[in-house]
Amino acid sequence: MKLSLRVLSTWLFLALFINSYGQDHSKQAYKYVQFLKYLNTYYVDSVSNEKLVEDAIKGNLMEMDPHSTYISKEDVKKMNEPLKGNFEGVGISFNILNDTLFVITPIPGGPSEKVGILSGDRIIKVDEENIAGIGLTNEDVFSLLRGPKGTRVNVSVLRRSVDQLLDFSITRDKIPINSLDAAYMLSDEVGYIKLNRFSMTTMGEFSEASVMLKEEGAQDLILDLTGNAGGYLDIAVVLTDQFLDNNKLIVYTQGLNSPKREYFASSKGLFEEGKIVILIDEGSASASEIVSGALQDWDRGIIIGRRSFGKGLVQRQLELPDGSMIRLTSAKYYTPSGRLIQKSYKNGNEDYEMEIYNRYENGEFINKDSIKFPDSLQYRTLINKRIVYGGGGIMPDIFVPLDTTSYSDYYSNLIRDGILNQFVLEYVDKNRKKILNGYENFLKYTNDFVVTDELLTKLNNFAIKEGLDFSQEEFELSKNRIALIMKAYIARDLWSTSEFYQIINQENENLIKAIEVLDHWELYSKKLLY
Image (cartoon, rainbow, N blue to C red):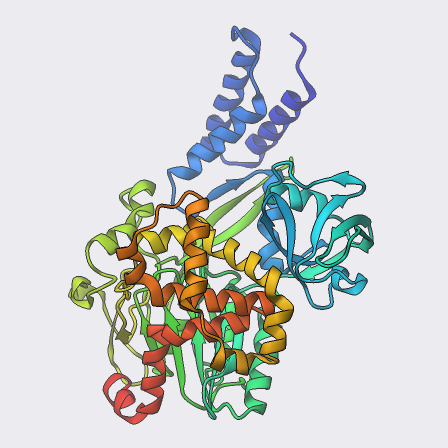
């Protein structure tokens, strides 16, 4: 039987694996090689050796822990882009509106802005090919507009108030993926920074924002890590170093085949002095837990919110011969006091994936008393010997329940189905000049712009056209929340995500509590830090 080159390469790889490992490993690898040989020699139908090997790897990894995974060669590049902090393309924030590619905003300094693409433009053609009204998807847009730095793409744009299509030739370039969502002053002395990930660009963004805030008078800082699922360990260490004195332990890692490795604070940081509050919730994981765990253990700041996710496994990315890779857990994270950050996964992946939902069902998001920690999981902070808890995740010093008083199915569907976002895109597209003429800067917009009942009625009518049944009772329950998010969306489309958060944070219960804590620091610090 004539074997394909792919089969031969697979067997060669396994043969090399056999020769490089111990006797027991060699026997098992040879067993699998023999299995493949029998399949290709005797099986009634043709088989894909590539798929067989991939499925075997995936199956093995699924039995180990929830975060050891196989990544196909096609997904490797996509996976790395958010953490590297950039991709190569034309540089637009976009949405698909009425089956047309709609430019929300060109990224400042990016290729599209440089050639004159404007917010509200509709891209109708790419390289002479029509892309409007053909069922365009986000993946289609990535395929059309992303590409190697230095390559060109020609686009034809429909612009409001212009009768004919406008043609642009855009030279692709590296486009930054920001990890910082917002940075602004909350008061004369308190700054606020929100991070969405820990990527290669995070420290540059954080440092620039910190210097800006300090120039504006910031002495204290609220660092918002809610919803931040983590990223690079080294970036988390460097960020934590901005708050801790020299030589303080930040985190250590250890595993069966990975000796204990400790990470310490080093040079003087940007916020080693001043009050620090960290905001976390059930979406805060990994690197976010390293930062909050270290500051809690050293009694350096106050942690506010809800118990974090509990992801404390260190992964090594190991390449396979065909360009795919495995992300293999090699060690575990421990806070300076010795707390294991990782929550249990002994009951299998399905139970692990349901754990956050089970927290909600058990009332943990609403009531602190629903969270039970055995005495065996008690640890002591390193300065003031306060009791803190291990067992997975970081338990905040001050618990803030999830506010569900204004939530309804109608509100949830407006957000989840993208209806509110689509409505705002169309509203801003039609009224951009009018709004900007009436509110010449964001401060005036914040103070004076009101989402009227008339505008809300238009939203409800739009939602009905989109197939969402209207409920007066549920609308009244969520009305103020809907209006706030609409105002925030409009601000985002006119300015940036930082302005979005300045609006939405007006009802952020975690942030409201953090401001209260800073305003009464002596009372809270005496109770919580000593």
